[in-house]
Image: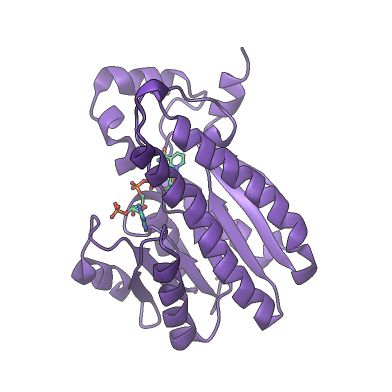
Length: 256
Ligand code: NAP
């Protein structure tokens, strides 16, 4: 058990990669805080059922990560329940496909609001608490291969993930004196609901797989395995890095 009795917050843990990380962390002995979006894919009953499967010391908290008041309320609940926070996984994310010339301000702000502002506000509130505790911590961002690789029609998404990459690099320096490790995981094409349209379209799926040297989509559990390493003491000297979990996609794309 790599994370025994650690308190870990996973944002957007109702689905896909976040759910796989929450499940893996619970199996590694962590007390997991499952964050889900109010009015989102799952309701409170479903969130409670998810954490019930993790054992008695897990908590489900509804909060929209793009709203500071929601995030502060969530953290107050975490502290009142567990008294501390050790690990924060900034996973909640959305994308909107739209040619740049047609993107509206509301769409731009929604993507940046969840992916970049949300990651900023969750990590700031968690890092302040970790500094107060005085014994370090782990901040992990689920960015994307598109923190670096262009993706036409997804400019807000790429801008948000590129921003997360630079935020992570800065924080790895600023928070080093407090022994807070800060790293990114950059998934490639993982089979989750965010990719449902591609997964449901045999031609699009075949094209996507054709770009991946490993020859298949990744599984959420494969991202969770890297998160478990980065959240553990095994990664105490790892900070400021991006870990690609992409079956070689980045190398293939940058070959040309
Ligand atoms: P997903 O299944 O759609 O999961 C996204 C999660 O974020 C959902 O649980 C969603 O809840 C939650 N969420 C959205 N807005 C939120 C908000 N304002 N506050 C709190 N939670 C919110 O997709 P996924 O693939 O697991 O994505 C997880 C992360 O991985 C994202 O940051 C994504 O950019 C990144 N990523 C994924 C891939 C991939 O191929 N799958 C590749 C690169 C990066 P609701 O569904 O209820 O809205």
